[in-house]
Amino acid sequence: MRGTARDAELWGLLFARRLPIRHGDEVKIVWRMTGEGPLRVSARHRDGTPARVVFGPEEHSGSTWRRPGQEWGTGFAFPKAGCWKIELTRTRGSGHVWLPVR
Image (cartoon, rainbow, N blue to C red; front, side, top):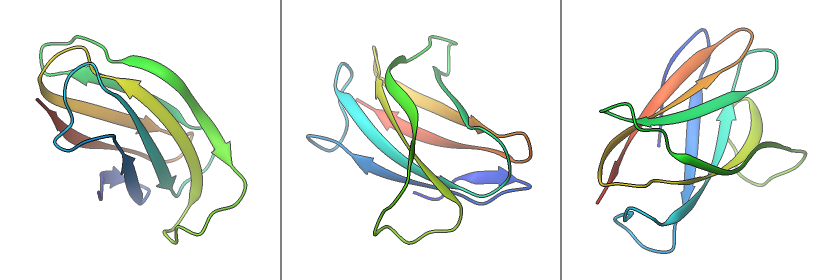
């Protein structure tokens, strides 16, 4: 998935047991983002409920996935159905993606 970003380019690669994603599932997302500085990631439902962070962000040193920027892995569990906004921020550069969960 391609994210919407400012002062950066943002891509996400989704690893899920099944699609569409169901609430309660643990989902791994690998991110590639240009910019500078450490990566901070959060996910919130439209009503403000936060997703549970399972792990990350963990910087990856090597990969065969070719997109611009540095690479990190994250894991989330989404506690309810709906549309989730995942926000990524670096010292320079920020972006987001919307992820539907059933």
